[in-house]
Length: 222
Image 1 (cartoon, rainbow, N blue to C red):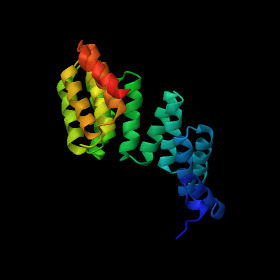
Image 2: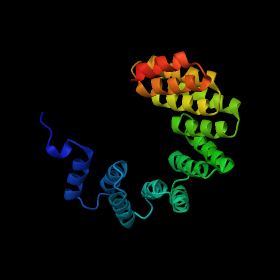
Image 3: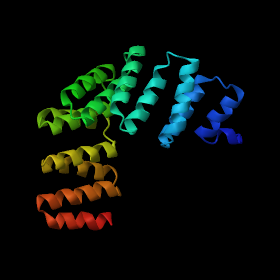
């Protein structure tokens, strides 16, 4: 079976659907998310606003507009839009997490944890929420809670290489090198050719003063 050219990528598919049905809100929203992923915020916003013209209660359109505002560092606007999304869909763990992320970026860690905990109530297995919580705990020197969140991530997503690397970097930045080594070496075992795992391991060993291991992993990374 040969697929029509309209189905070869998401962009063409949603444009094709809209040529047939210009008021298809699902296609408009998905097209907006494609634009957003490609950092075309103007067109992403146009699609989100078109969805709201057709369906004023579309919470996920507000979510998309909030994401655009967040990426543009317009945090107050993003908070307003995420809260509007939550009015329409109070159980959205994504909107709750994104609100928490903004408060985290603003250094309002208690507020961030409030929303991360709410998000985790809605979706107890969200790796994104758990990662965000771990980051807040580390920044606040709450290492026991941070390690518990990290262990939960590993338990739920043992093959999440990028998550393991991110956790390892956070521990290294906090000066907890054994914890950092644990997560970074685990990532490297899962992905033996991971440049990011090698580079971050090398940097961690350099900061520890173990220059032989640092040089070893820098060479592997190169």
